[in-house]
Each structure stands twice: as structure tokens, then as C-alpha cells.
Image 1 (cartoon, one colour):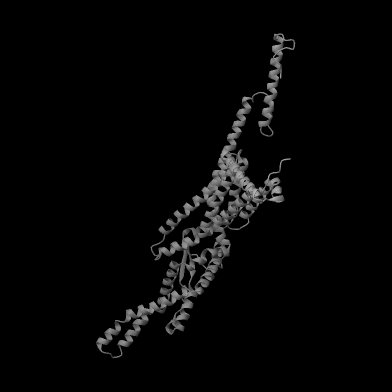
Image 2 (image 1 turned 60 degrees about the horizontal axis):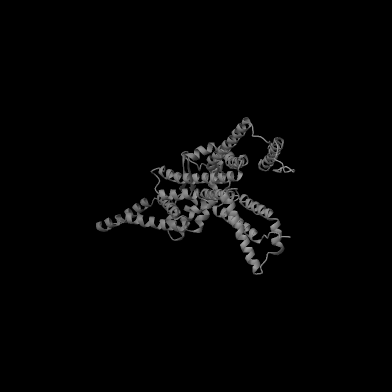
Length: 461
């Protein structure tokens, strides 16, 4: 600093004032340079004067370009998220037999589907036995035994009740078979065969059995169910069931022209179902890396991903109504068709809930780790709460000891290990559920809180 008076007590001259002014300007320049050095981003060139207008314009243009790129990547990834989820789900149904059986096996336990299968199988057996013809022959033969006319007329009137009684007995037996564990085994075996044949049809295998009709109807063959019913009827004394010809009714699982179109696009489905989810992840990661404020970008990415899964959930609800509205008039049980639809897309709905939960968890984690004032206040409040609990325990003789001291020194490492473990837990399973994602998030949050409570700051020297 420059003194305000001369050493001899005389008033300062013009030269003294000029020297003081030069010294003050030099000191201000040093202060500005120091301040600019502390606040400038890494790699920036610090000068003592204002930036040239051209440099400012280039920086502003570059910033707008990066922001536009981030927005474009997020929008494209959000729009592709539902498509990626659907193609991945469809590919897993086509290529993974266990996944397919896990989807369709519960259909056999649905009461509505069991009733529809019972009706279809009963109709096939009654028509195969020609119950009406047998009852007519029986009443005609009895009426021709020389009975009185009144008795003969009464016998002939028994034809319809006889048909109803036989049909009821067949229906009861079929219902027992369908409700048994044997039907579940038959259903699973039939669907395994259907899956193998579907894959063969989609691949264009000439030796495949035509389970896929030209109109896109995928059916399950009920021949094994008929055989079980026939054996039970014969064992119970209904020997006429032994004359039942070979019948093989079918139960339609799905009916849509999309199945025929899917036959020509099987390879495309395989490629899209494999790589499109990874493309969505790559776009979201690129958006985060390109952004200036990555914590805010990560929060936006999480919300965008959750929004894409929400769009898929809405699309499934709309698709269900469209599917039921497009059913042909020949379908006698629309409720059974609705039950089949719900079971087929059940695992896709699980994926929707898992994706929604994952996106929200990422968004919340990014917010809490961000630099906003509210996020810093939240972290500070959590730290104060942990310190209060730790101090309260130490006042009562409960201390974390060397472990707490070590965690106090390695707190950042402990956080990284917990977050990395949570990421591995989310990536490791082949299929996620919403409950699993929330469970991993809760466990990670509890571990982070435990670290904050246990970790002790180093004691002052």
C-alpha cells in the first residue's frame, strides 16, 4: 500500500500523486488477475482486460450448440425408449423359450380362460361323438319296439333332454380336467411346441407345422386335453366315448395381422431387440457427457427415460382397447381374449414399471448430487443429522472407534463403492422389476446414511 502523507510532513506534490495513482492501478491489476485465475474454468487463458467481442460470440455460439445437441439427444432417446422396450420384449418372447413359457403359463390358471377352453373342448367332443345323432337313433329304436303310441311319443320327446344330459356330463368331465394340474402340464407342453413352431415359421423353416394361420392367428392345439377327457369318460362307464374319432380343437392365443408381418421382419426384430436398447443408453450417456452441467443433465435424462416408459404404458392401455375392438364377430368370449392379452403383456408391463422407477431414481440421485442451492441444503441437513446422531451416541458411550475414523478419511471412497455396487445390482439381472429397482435404491440410500452417521471427522490437533 502507498502512504497518504510524505515522510517530511509536507503536502504531496503532483509527482507524488501520480506515483500513488500508478501504484494503485498496478495493485488493482494484480487483484483482477488473481480473481480471474481463481474463477476461470480449467484451461482458460486469463487476461487482464475484457475478452474480445469475437471470442465472446464464439463462446456463446458454442454453448448454444452444445445445449441444442443435448436436447436433440434426449428427445431422440425418449422417443426410442418405448420402441426399444417393445422390440426387446418381443425378441425375448421369440428367442427365449423359458421367457415365453413364463408369459403364457399363467394363462392356464385364469378362470375365464379355463371356461373358454372347457366350452371349446366340450363342443369338439360332442360334435365328434355326434351326440344328437346317437340320441335320435336311440329314441327311434325304442319307439319302434311296439310301444303304445303315447309312450312312443314320450320316448321321442326325450331326445333333447338326453342330448343335454350327455353334453352336461362331458362338460363336467372337461371342466375337471381343465382345472387339474394335468391341464397345466398339457398347456405348458403345447405352448412349448407352439413356441418352437412359431420360431420355425418366423425363420421360414419349410418343415414347420402351420400353427400360424394366414390371417395371423396363433393357436394352441387341445388334442391332448381331448384324450384325457376321453379316458376319464370311458373309465366312468361312458363307453360310447371310446368311439370318439381323433379330434384336435384349437384355442386361439393371439389373432393379429401383425404376426404375419412379423414373419417377414424376424431378422429386423432380432437386430432391433438386441441393439436398440444399447443405442438408447448410448444416446443418454452422450447427452450427459456433452452437457455443461452434468448433474442437471443426468436429472433430465432420468426424467426423460421415465417419461418414455410412461408413454409405453399409455400405449399398452390404448393397444388393449384397440385389440379388443378389432376382434372378429366369431369370437364368443371377448373376456377370454382380454385375459390372454393381459397375460401376454404382463412382463412388458413389469418392464415399464421397472423403467419408470429406474428413471425416477436416477433423477432423484442426480438432483441430490447436484450443485443447486436446495440440493446443497439437503446434503447439509443430512450431514447435520448424521453428526447429531453420532454425537448423541458418543455422549452415551457409543462410539464408532477406528472404523468411524477410517470412514471419516475415506468417506468419498465409501460413497463411490456404494453407488458402484448399486449400479452393478441394476445391470446384473437379465430382467428388472419396479420393486427390485426401488429395493436397490433404498438399500443404497440406507448405506449412504449409515456412512454419514458412522464416519467421524478427524479430531483437531
